[in-house]
Amino acid sequence: MTSSMPPPSFAPVAFQPEIESVLRTNYTSDQWSSIRSALALPPSTTFLRVNTLLLPRSEAKVMLQTYVDGQCTEKGWPSCPVYEHPVFTDVLYLQVEGPLVVEPAGNEVIIDTMCGNAVLRGADIFATGVLAAQAPMRKGDRVAVYVDLDGACLRGQSREYTGRKTFVGNGIALMGREDLYKGSAKQLRGKGVGVQMTSPLYKSPGLSDMFSRGIILQNLPSIMVGHALDPQPGQTVLDMCAAPGGKSTHLAALMKDQGTIIALDRSFPKIDRLTAYISAQNLKSVKAYCCDATGCVMKQAETDAFLNTESIEWWPTGSRITALPRETFDRVLLDGPCSALGQRPNFSPDITLGVLKHYPQYQRSLLHAAHKLLKPGGILVYSTCTFNAAENEHNVAYAIATFPDLEILPILPAFEGIAAPGLEGVPGLCEDARRACCRFEPGMECGEGLESIGFFFARFRKREVQGVHSDTVAHQDSTSR
Ligand SMILES: C[S@@+](CC[C@H](N)C(=O)[O-])C[C@H]1O[C@@H](n2cnc3c(N)ncnc32)[C@H](O)[C@@H]1O
Image (cartoon, rainbow, N blue to C red; front, side, top):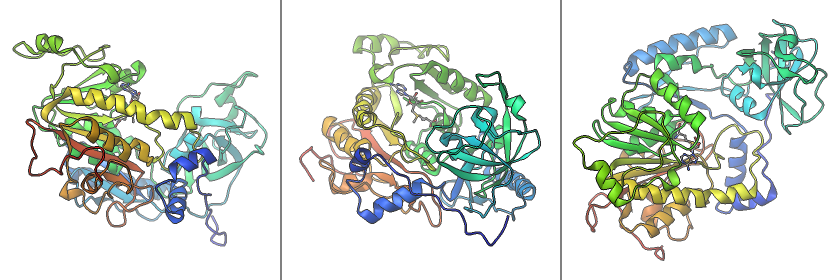
């Protein structure tokens, strides 16, 4: 390390022109350039959620501080304090410093952009993430780690990579080249951590080991979604798009593991992993099913037959199901598939215009199912991890216009000053509804001095009878402003 070098800088994220023209519509030039700059960097705060079923936050804080101190000593960093979030009683956080001045040391290791994103947030590199390792790389060597920005580096390449790349820090090889690759086809042989990051560009301790101790890495807006849904012990809750399970397990903790959480995902392998994740946390209330949530609604007669028993018999966890009973869920979470453009850092967004334009329609089909499954009086939270207005404010306006019994609920007082309101100028979104949206622009402060990913959510209630509740904003038709 040398102090004479200037700190490294990351170029603002560049989008294809046709994507940029869609995304920047609602922003001034300054806002758009600050979003692009923020997307190139990791958030400056790392948030962790405490599994309060397992331990109180005060105990988790002490345990985490001890672990972080150990990591700081190992890496030669000054101590990094762990803080309790002032509003959310299950949240701890630490501030991340960077980019630090680190000089590349040793032969190079090339990783892909996804792995690079994780390294900047404190991760080590699994063998599967090592795209190429300059020869000769032996176990114990110091290596300089670079991200292949164009996805053009050949797996297993042994010479220096001359394509576009960016340095993300130094590490120690825990495997040599011969442990990583085998044969002329350079098939991957190694398993487990391939490179341990010893001098990453960001002072961000690796915290994935804390999971087994009930301290879970989760971005603040994702944690706020659980609090926005406000599930109560004993309720019946639906998480329509649940894998990998960060929010389902949070809902279980908020419900003290009492009640039923039906967690769906369309992907069978993801349901397998989710089932393992739930049992690793010893949760009894979460039942995971493989199901396409777009059409998962029983007809009324089927619903009546299903519910007309003394106690509802859900299916064995892990099974494949096709439909759920109508108007049965006290709470519905729709944290569906989205363009994920709020994730940070994001070295090179590779989304196509076709895919970007497909999402809002797909999310609307999920909204239709959510509305049918929600009990009158029940609460729905709709969320995405993107800043794309078409998937956010436009879908909120769509929901308000399409479902006359669905009313958007105002922002919870505790969220004021943490979330920003929705974007202006969206047709069909009146001022009250815009203010009820919770938007997290990439790079914006979410509380004093805190920062997270780009995110969006809104809360709705299904009216029991037509009329306006005291704590809601007025329902509006699609022509109102
Ligand atoms: C943003 S992720 C959900 C993250 C999750 N809520 C959490 O907090 O861990 C979206 C998920 O939706 C799933 N998905 C996509 N289409 C779906 C559908 N039609 N029905 C159910 N799940 C779907 C994807 O497989 C993916 O796992």
